[in-house]
Image (cartoon, rainbow, N blue to C red; front, side, top):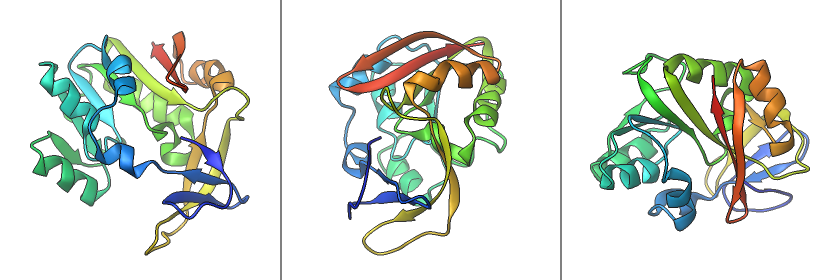
Amino acid sequence: MNVRLGNRSPHLAASDGTTILLDVGLWNGNATQRDETVLQDVRGPVLDIGCGPGRHVYALATRGVAALGIDVAPTAVWLAQAKGVPVLERSVFDRVPGAGRWKTALLLDGNIGIGGDPVPLLRRIADLLAPDGRIVIEVDPPGTSTSSLEVNLVTEATVSERFPWAVVGVDGLAAVASASDLEVYEVGCVDGRWFGWLAA
C-alpha cells in the first residue's frame, strides 16, 4: 500500500488530505512472485482476511494448501467464487468457520487497516488461530507513522461514506503486536514491500 497525494486512481481519501492508493489491478490478477515468496512457508489451514477476488487463496489451493478467504465486498466475493475460489462474504468480526483451528491468518494488501484500530483486529484474529497459529501481516515501509484515519473510498464513479482505517508502519509493528498480546518473530522486505510474522 502506497501513500501519496492527489491521485485519481481508486484510493482511500483521508480527512487529513492523505491519499492511500489501492492496487486494484494487482488484487484482480494472479499471485505475483512476491506473493508466492510470502506464502511459501505458510501452514494450512489458512484464513485470508480481506481476501478480495482471492488471488492468495487460489495460489495456496494450487499447492494443495487448505485455505478460505473472507471479505465484506460482495463484488470481490462474487469474482472469487466465479473462479471457484472458496470465499465467504463476511467480516472478520462476525462468526468465522473453523475458529480456533486456523494455522495461519493472512492480513495482506493493507488490510491491517480494517476497523481503524489494529489492536482489536489482531486480538480478534488471534482468537481465530490454533494455539500454534501465526499471522502474516503486510505493513508500510520504514518512516511511516502508525495512525488511525477516517477515509472515503473513491473510485471514478462513486465516493463511499466515511469509515475508519488504520496505517501501521514496520517501525511501529512491535508496539502494535505487544498491545495485542502477540510478538513479532520475523520482519522482512520482499520486492520493496514489508511484512511481519506474528505469534501468540
